[in-house]
Image (tube, rainbow, N blue to C red; front, side, top):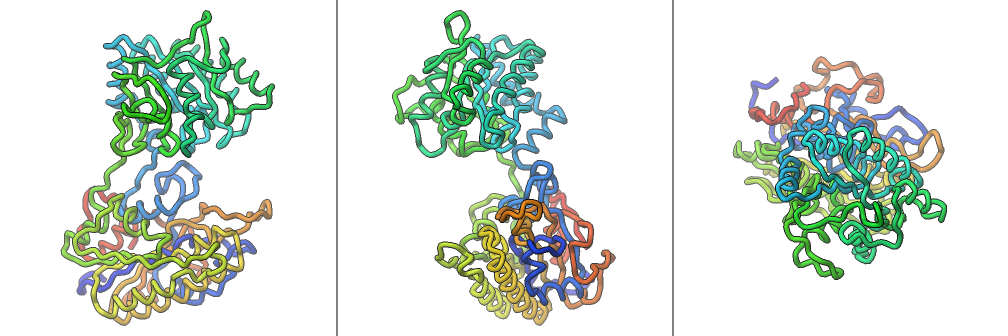
Amino acid sequence: MMESKRPKPAILMILDGWGAAPPSRSNAISQAKTPNVTNLIKAYPSMTLQASGEAVGLAWGEIGNSEVGHLNIGSGKLVYQNMPRINKSIANGSFFENEKFLQAIEYAKKSKGAIHLMGLISSGGVHSHINHLFALMELCAREKCKNVFIHGFLDGRDMPYNSGIDFVEKIQAKSEELKIGKIASLSGRFYAMDRDNHWERVELAFRAMVEGKAKEYFEDPSEAVRASYEKKVYDEEFVPVVITEGDKPVATIEEGDAIIFFNFRADRAREISKTLVLPGFEKFQRQYLKNLFFVAMTEYEKDLPLEVAFPPETIETPLARVISEAGLTQLHIAETEKYAHVTFFFNGGREEAFEGEERVLVPSPRVASYAEKPEMSAKEVTKKITEAIMADKFDFIVVNFANGDMVGHTGDLKATIKAVETVDSCVKKIIDVVLAKGGVAFITADHGNAEEIVNLQSGEIDKEHSTYPVPFIVISKDLEGKNAGLPEVPGGDLSLVQPSGLLSDIAPTILKFLQLEQPKDMTGKSLL
């Protein structure tokens, strides 16, 4: 199969939101007429790939998304997202050797300062996880730290509205067990984790933590939460309070202290961080604390003057770089909605194009809802691709068809069926030209969506992504009628076969067909 000359072009078609699920009244893909994709599944090597949860570096059972999907496809390796990456480091012990955490502890010891652990106390796993706080408390206990204080933000959004009391009590129990850590302040996330420039909210959380000032003071953190519940003010809107001991705040953040902010999601961590670390901060009057050692769990924003415990992982050799360094040409094309995905994310989080890489953005239609125009700009994208193939311009092409995902998000079943049928007809036009040129095509998706428009249990519209696997089909003249050792796909229904690999296995498969060597840090495996 591989001795012949390199196929040109090799094209990767990412059918966004096209998952493989059993036929049902909620499945827009099984209800749509898709003769072209179905015939390709029957005639060429076809399988499914895992596109959610741990298979793409997310938490177990978490739905996939376009950013993570394209990152895994383009980098050819499993890219761990923040929470699983931190969980893994706790499990293998590297968390307790993290140099930024250890520097913070060392700094506080030298300056005879305190260590403040701040963040969302929740097991929601969206912005933070309580287990990460417990691991930090354990680290402080191991390092024999003296003054450790906790500034907890109550959740109520990613968790039940009144679950904050449970987390406060869990922290108190953990403090007892480890003989370390005291809760010094509590704030609802409405105040401490604003992201929309409501600085008057952020100010209340800041004053509680730094100045020990609040509308109310309590000696017992649990009592503070219960008192708020009695007023029918629950976790999210919990007004910041200061915890006291003998009429004085348990602790305030002061010069010479160290702070570890254990939220791992950036958007709601930026504002409160800026109040603490920016010298020229002017959104409200506050004393700037010099000599604070501030560690953020992840990178909240480039150029903030703070340390980062888990900096973004660098992807050195994504597929696009390997193709570029081999002197080959490539085209990355999508309509507006998915352009960032076939460029920035597909290239491993890199903004600039590689040498020999061209990018084409086709404008998405301007409509209030894509249900009004489920074809979106798929036909225009297809026209540009077929022209490029006929002109023999590119060795490799990656394209994203946005329809299944973007129309699937409207929750309109009829429109999503039309979207899927549009993509099916576009696939045929491209495959015909690729085969005529002696090229090879790969069809896949970044995650599911269009196959689950109604939640079959509740009957409610389901606009979200799914956890279903996605197709992977390899099409070239010499593979017709062969299944390349893969299990038979009964009736072309990919939902009937077990997944054979991961999204991160796609890039190594493409490199094999392009007869290019797979770099060492690309850890996926060729699927054929």
